[in-house]
Length: 276
Image 1: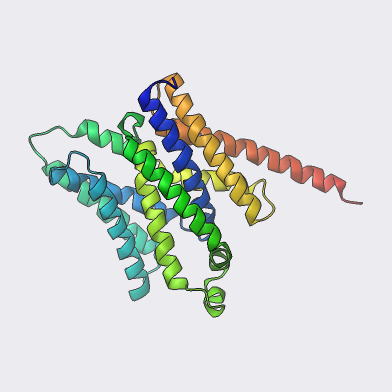
Image 2 (image 1 turned 120 degrees about the vertical axis):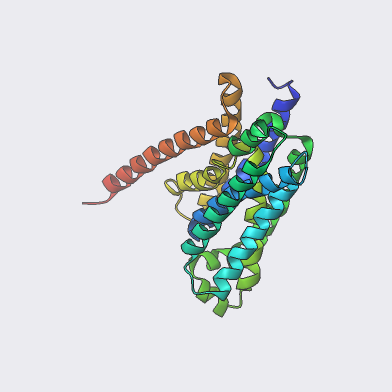
């Protein structure tokens, strides 16, 4: 298993990207931005379709570019209009998917079904060394940036108005966070696929919440769960010969159920330990 080059690439990609998604997921959940990551991942379909249309052998670059464009449009509409955030996200999600489907339907002369399935559902064979090292760089840069700005991001997640009063550069941090989240989602699509990538951002921090007492613990538990889910799911997919993205998601869900049970047991023990 570990001597296969494609498995080495897949395991390293999971080792780098899964903890990164879980780390960002803590702040995504705190800021109620799960629907945003879902919108960005689904908008990647239009980017993939444009890449095929323009003749790209590997449509990763137009996919990332279009995802960043959608994120920028979302921030612009949020600042310049009175539309609610979920309305903007629903508009962009449905519009991007519709655009992607139309472009794919207009393509003639080449069968893109195989390549499209890789982006929709993930494919460990499609991961190359460039993706792996880009994921490593992204993990290091984002981790350092998050911990340097941890206090500001925590205050921003808790109360944006209070953060602005305290001198936190809210607008700049919002744009940086959205950019980093968009790049992370786009990079993780190769491993999980467009359909499932949001789950790696949402499930590990949700599992960590059952066991953590503060933000520091939630970050640590979330990263651990993301790491176990990503690497464990990749190994399961190889052993059972099933899609990698689905195996990672189901592994994360099992970890979530275990954490939920452990959290309830701890709460019951704490209740019994209270003096009557």
